[in-house]
Image (cartoon, rainbow, N blue to C red; front, side, top):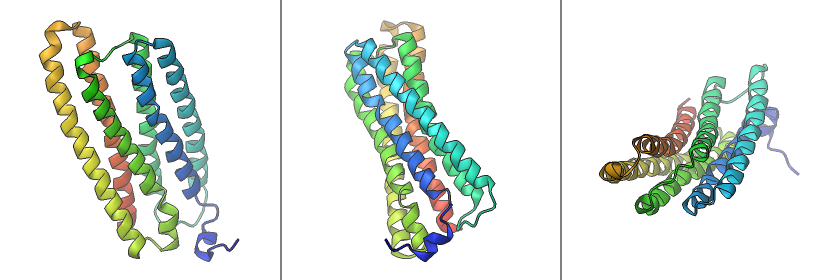
Length: 225
């Protein structure tokens, strides 16, 4: 196999493990879909199984994160700043941490999304997962960006992908407000403590899209460096 000489210069770069990290992080986030479907069925045993799978993936992501940080600590040549890559890793990691936090809190309290909100919540959660998937696709372009020196047609493609990611995140903001409004109308019918935790779950699910957008923004920064 022919090795691109430009890539060969960065053979020990953290780019590949960063791509592996976002792959694991996205799997972690996607598992929230079957997790919440299990809760909608009041199947808490299955929900806890999914919660454990999310926790396992979060640990796997942590191991890759440590590997990336070890590489960044070395004196290596990189086409972008180490601080930008480190900040990108932080945003990616927050997606996995947030996924684990949400699933753990919902499981511990057996917190059920009210049936009248479940369809809207499904759509909202899926859009937040879409944001994580879009961030994964953007970050998996890093190696191609290396080949082109972060310039030209490949850079233009990535810029458009980041813009699409921004739009997905904006969609989730609108959907979250809609859920908040509907939950507000139900507050008198629910336990005040459950209401508090439901607002928190809706907010934290939205954070998945926020962190994904921030990861995309870091790629934008690299393109401008």
